[in-house]
Length: 242
Image 1 (tube, rainbow, N blue to C red):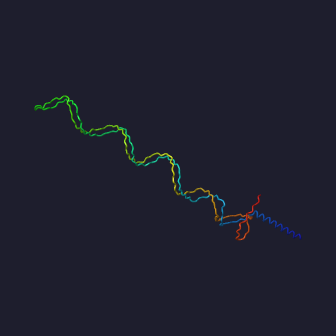
Image 2 (image 1 turned 90 degrees about the horizontal axis):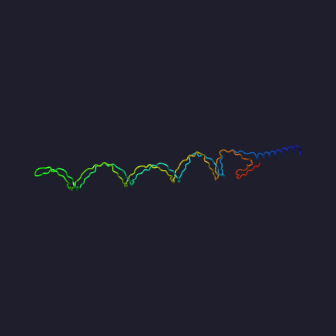
Image 3 (image 1 turned 135 degrees about the horizontal axis):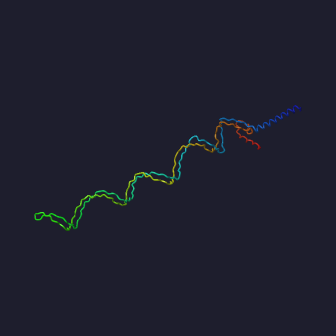
């Protein structure tokens, strides 16, 4: 074998070895870039995904429950009252009385009256003045018909049952702790002004659309295959620990 042949063989061997080294370095260190736009895909989330979400619309909440609570009350309240009250009324005071009291009766007189007067008497056809002195017994029933005026203060003291009709609003103070069970049935729209923290769980594969993606695929994870080859890709080779 000539020196020229040996030289070309050495160059060819060096080129093969250099190409193998370069190919091995590229295989280990170079990634392929795959640009995707509006590409449909199906994903599976094996773990719950924590997200922060902004709620753009008001949340519609329907409440149907009962709340047991103690309500402190310290205020004045107005209570309308329209009833007939039966009470015992006591009275002890002086009242003025001004009136005319009619008196129609008989007065019985049975006594001795002192008489010292002059009476006229007819004696023998003449009228004479006769002095009359002494005690004369009088028995009589004298009718009396008078109007007696009364204008004086009279002291009255008594207790008697009284019926009083009450029709008014009573203003009374109320200070107490009232235990109450409050039923709440309502439907309201609540605006949400802060972001919500949530965890999303997708149990089944979900269709998505990849709007834009720039994927870097290590060459060592790629393999060549024919159309329709659905075999699972081989697991990616692990880089040796440094």
